[in-house]
Amino acid sequence: MNASRTLATAARVLAQLRHDRRTIALLLLIPVAMITLLRFVFDASPRTFDSIGASLLGIFPLITMFLVTSIATLRERTSGTLERLLAMPLAKADLIAGYALAFGALAVVQSALATAMSLWLLGLDVVGSPWLLLLIALLDALLGTALGLFVSAFAASEFQAVQFMPAVIFPQLLLCGLFTPRDTMQPALEAISNVLPMSYAVDGMNEVLRHTDVTATFIRDAGIVAFCAVLVLILGAATLRRRTA
Image (cartoon, rainbow, N blue to C red; front, side):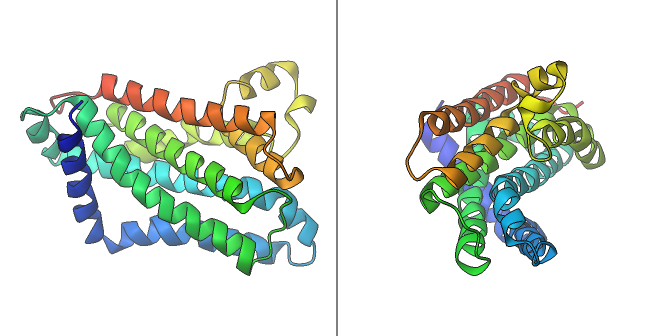
């Protein structure tokens, strides 16, 4: 992998996104809007907002980054841009890393906005450090980016990329422990939830919600989410096709 080529790819993607105001709005404003809506839904029950707000603070960025990354990458493929780029002396790892770096930079801004809004304007009450909350939110957003890059290799159109969401995101959403503790699920469902990265994202958020210090469980959860993001990026590079079918 070549650092200069990776940075050049990231700069090109960011330059393109800068002129796409709708995508920027979706990336930066939708998570903030959703967490704000959730706050007012539970306006009469602030404790309920506190109990699930932290978890959703990580889930919303993951979902939006997955959608935007998969669609944007598909657009590059269907327009022939990816094929032209890969015809140059550009490794697939350089391309995937460049896309991940560009969308990762946006993920930093997105996570910072959503976290700041939740803590200081919406009154989300957490026991742990806000920086730990931001760290998990950022890892979740990067995981969404990695998943979006990965599934884009298997979609033939932007519509198909959106169709992957029920298959990739919804099962994780249902089994991550947001709606019911994972240890109360049926054994088979609990076993499945134990291998889904969103489960550890929610667990990590809950650790920040309940503990003032960095716990071993938090380190484990953050490490698993980060590992899954890197693993999916590697798989994305391995499955990236040099020619558009």
